[in-house]
Image (cartoon, rainbow, N blue to C red; front, side):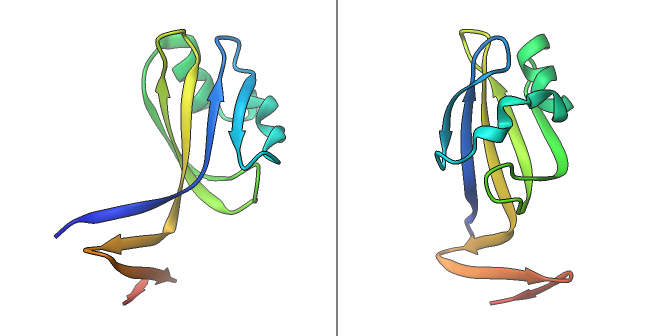
Length: 101
């Protein structure tokens, strides 16, 4: 079976950790990326990282940041919504540790 995840937001940072692109556009509060140490680690050390559960700056929804360094020493961040998944095209929603299809 195939598992897919929902990317709630996506961000691109420059080599100083400053936001240069965000989707949704309202996600400007990531400008203070020092609040997200795993993000700064990717920018500073050029190492991919996965955060613990954090609040998405655009929506305040609980997400996990997957952060990958870019060739220009910035970072690409995907905010993964851990509560919304799909297996083989069927939506799965998690409620208090219980999966409902």
